Image 1 (tube, rainbow, N blue to C red):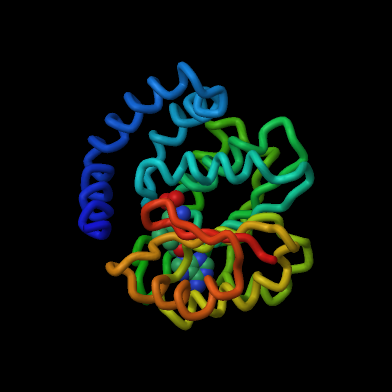
Image 2: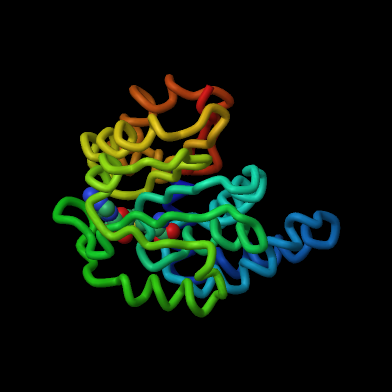
Amino acid sequence: MKNLLHKAASFLGAIGVADAAYTRVLDLRSIVDPEARDFRRAWSRIQRIEGLLVPGQEEWLFRAARRLPDGAAIVEIGSYKGRSTTALASACVGTTKHVYAVDTFNGNDSDFSQRDFLPAWKESIESNGIVAWTTAVPGISWEVGANWEKPIGMLFIDGSHQFEDVLKDFDAFFPHVVSGGIVAMHDVTEGWPGPLRAWREVVKPKLSNTGAYSSLAFGTKP
Ligand SMILES: C[S@@+](CC[C@H](N)C(=O)[O-])C[C@H]1O[C@@H](n2cnc3c(N)ncnc32)[C@H](O)[C@@H]1O
């Protein structure tokens, strides 16, 4: 049932219906919730960017990034054209938090065939006024992770969806996540056996306070 709802939301999102419906609900929530009001301003920009999140997950990312302490580094594996990057970085504006967007910006040979979208990612970042809070890190994610040095306040994994690759991403970056830091994974759903298995068998057991927002699973590092 949950998977069916996820697929329906993805389809509706792809044709723009879910975003419009979400906007109406967000407008109502903005009347009573100041954080929803802040996100509403960012949402006007975010919803124009092509991406693969299910509506509502952008707000979850925004709110999670908002709650991080000043100075926190956010590592996003899998940025595509900048939809999730913009959700995260919009929450960093005016702070010293920063989003590192790790992506080949050229897809991969296993589950993401689109190519050459760094120009589109840059256009999203520049046109939305978040250049100062984002850095593109082009490369194979686990190779970037092998040379990573900064402590990470939030790790968002949405790169290759192959089981072994998700584990390589997790193994490369998780040691840098600070205690109390957030780990979130996208596409933890029956439709994506790689992330689902990685979450269940390896990632979730290493986290506390775990939960899920539709296909976005999350927890904190003890
Ligand atoms: C599902 S998309 C990310 C969607 C994005 N988070 C959004 O909000 O729209 C997956 C991304 O992971 C990237 N990717 C896949 N395998 C990768 C790898 N091994 N290293 C780095 N990036 C990779 C792809 O290029 C693609 O942009």
